[in-house]
Image (tube, rainbow, N blue to C red; front, side, top):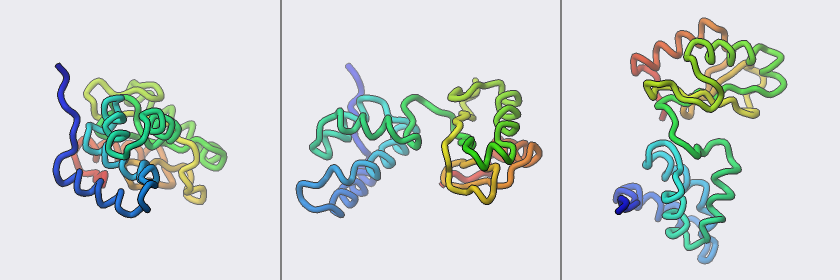
Amino acid sequence: MSETIAFKPESLAQVHKIIARYPEGRQKSALIPVLHVAQKEFGGWLDVPVMDYVAELLNIKPIEVYEVATFYTMFNMKPVGKYVLEVCRTGPCMVSGSEKILNHIRTKLNIKDGETTEDGMFTLKPAECLGACGYAPMMQLGKFFHENLTIEKVDEILDLCREGQIALD
């Protein structure tokens, strides 16, 4: 028998507060913020039972949740490391050296795009435009941007992560 999926009481209260922002019958509008809560609470990714639970809470069809969760790259469809390194790879960042940064991370951590290190610490996730073109190349780590990246800056960030000194929230 599988474990029952349920938000902790404080998270469920937050979800109900999010749903209450929208008019009656428009609870689907709460889907993206509720998925963020779910991803944070259930291990950093959205498993099918979690998405089904969200659908039930919002009184929508599971397919409606799957469509949104799989479309947006901010949602993870498989387990990820503690630190998800989202390196921008669009025009301005590529011209400014993001491919060099990505290759360095791949080599240093011995992972490919979308993979997680054996210790579960890092996942590499190349990203489409993160909206900081003037500060290229850049990487998002949690909700924070790390801009004007160099190999040395990346190494420092990875070391700080290993030491637990990089905040994600």
